[in-house]
Image 1: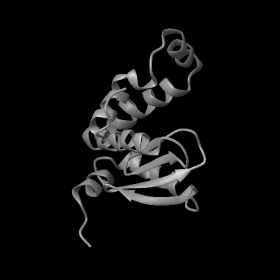
Image 2: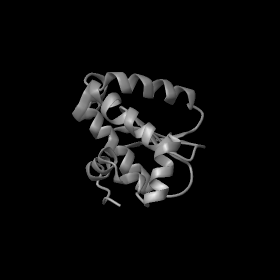
Image 3: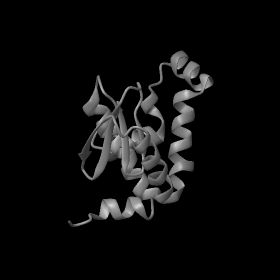
Length: 131
């Protein structure tokens, strides 16, 4: 079996997020899984996507390919940013999605969740046209 550069980089340069992703993966080991361009994808019962290093988590239903492309883009950000990924992409992304202040601001201004620079970049890297 040949180990690809994507996997080597995720388990070295992207180690912090890949370790966290592997723990989340193990917690969802009974869910459905498949491989996508070197990433390990889990289909879970949540309404949100999540990318942690080599691991992608997407909802079982609805808009899967679009979200899969976007989340794959986050895995490429992990390779580009290495240990800074959690600080520069992971934390801001979670805050942008979850904090009531940002939810209200997006609703009030009509701004898309995907308008934030770290989300736009994930779309572009994953091959998804920016929304």
